[in-house]
Image (cartoon, rainbow, N blue to C red; front, side, top):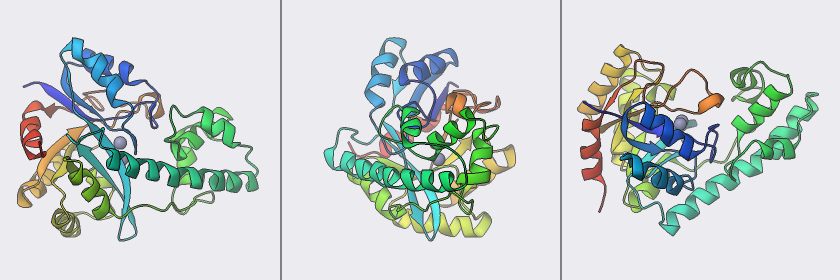
Length: 281
Ligand SMILES: [Zn+2]
Ligand SMILES: [Zn+2]
């Protein structure tokens, strides 16, 4: 059974590599199909399509959209949508603007804490207009204020930390509708990130399914065997499609490889056809 990777980031959001470089790594890892799922942006897709075609790798249109549901931030992955759909692209542009409004306020708070960071430095870290906290974190690492980006989030940037600024996020149900309206398949990303497990997670997924959710990210770099089988069961119970990917970011999140995660990830290619079938032609 061949392996696929449906969760990859590039320089178009907070990854460290270009789409072409990520395609190259996918090729080396023996990946037969892949999706670039940058945060709130689809501009990396054409680059990946072009690089992957001669290698015989299928590139599925993908995206990862931040949203809010009952006071918690949820990430929704989208697949097989029309990435050139102008209404869909307008929604993403609006999402990116909401990040940009937040960035100067985050920087102000860091400055007030005595950390010298400028907007220019943060913008220079980004490869597109999808600019957010990961780029601020990279500047904090470069300047020696923290050891790594994880420490940057823990000490300053995460919810509840002193430089955290809440962001206006669209409701998860709305985001699901954007993806469906563009003909795509909405999937709840990394369910371990939600603040609930067990029955509460079941109820959350059931509620999102009612709003149009079609899939659950079951295979993921940080899921252990028990978690994977629990999420498989949950997907089955709710008749949700199963997806998986590494959430590769390159140097931004070291230790995770394309197609292999932390070494033991294998997303089977048999997941692809049901996903394709669920998309609106
Ligand atoms: Zn995510
Ligand atoms: Zn991601």
